[in-house]
Length: 88
Image (cartoon, rainbow, N blue to C red; front, side, top):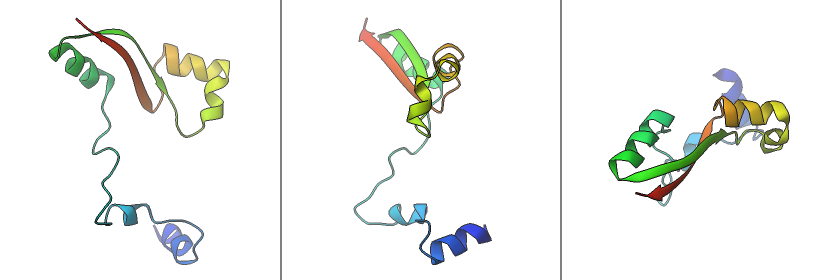
């Protein structure tokens, strides 16, 4: 994207991929797990899922609204996952 390139050149935006090329830096996540894959993982390793929900890191303040809680906790539409598990 040309706009992102110029924003980077004008030092108005950081280049996200630059941290991946740093020799002492590894990415936080190589992939984003799905609810289905996490359920499979916990079941395979004999954990019982007590509860799980989604949340959004984009706007932490929005997680406090009724609509956000409904979307994340009930419909599980957030961008991140949180599971509460116990060994079987």
